[in-house]
Image 1 (tube, rainbow, N blue to C red):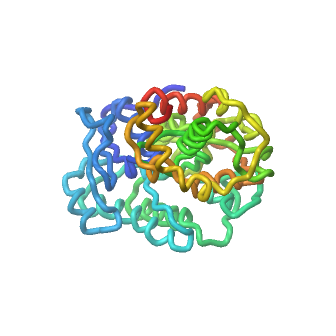
Image 2 (tube, rainbow, N blue to C red):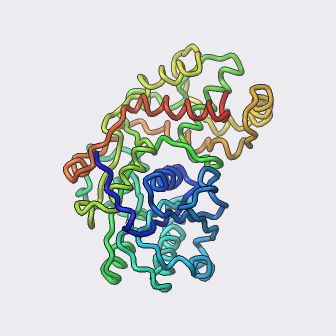
Length: 358
């Protein structure tokens, strides 16, 4: 697939640059020749600190005055990739997650930035998959369900501002993102890797800890590098104007088949699945992990930042099919795909080669 890019097209802001999605997008866009502004509460991404075409802004997006102050020099921004997210119960998540998007767009507008397109990253919660069984394959044209669901509020705010201020928008809906971000514990690959490494360290076989129904349910994932390429395409493709697209790897998987790849990577035997409340069973492994960090020569990492066990436990409690249709984005011109088994192995290999896991 041909990269849609011309260096004269402007400057792209990547909001939420320390998340799995934002990091992948920032790296890809910088490599593709964009002038990139990364935005996050934390400092710059280590991989991009020395890049001449990248600058970083640290800011609390919940503080509108601070956002305006920190964005004061960013009048050249023409494109925005919005991938910021505050994790909290849905009822309380609507206001802050919507406010962060609104504060970003309103600050740029007030400073005179002339936006061309905003690409917002949503997700499968738009179809209610976090609530349980839902219609599959889910399509972008499916009607909304009764909220609260902050993606709806964000999409409404984005569309209205696009109308008022004459810029274009695209919403991408990945699902089950496989990728990496240092210090971002909401990361399924990190969680699986640490669970396997700890199991091996304690001399027990690798058992699937999720619900019995999850073991054979049909699921999907989105590779972070593939998603970054979809974001790059959506920033400039005419066919992405004012559209919502599902973005997944292009295949489906079952944990009963993927689990063997995880075990093989760690050279571990498997045993019958055993449901485990991971919050409880992994909550006491901090000291063990620090011992492993020392004995295996790993990069220092705290137990709280290496993985989020409520997040992993929630992933593996989805005992129903989770399938989104990707026909629409293919027909629009984005045809990229990757085998999910290979995606998992790629990201595990990255973690090992960079000394995050043994």
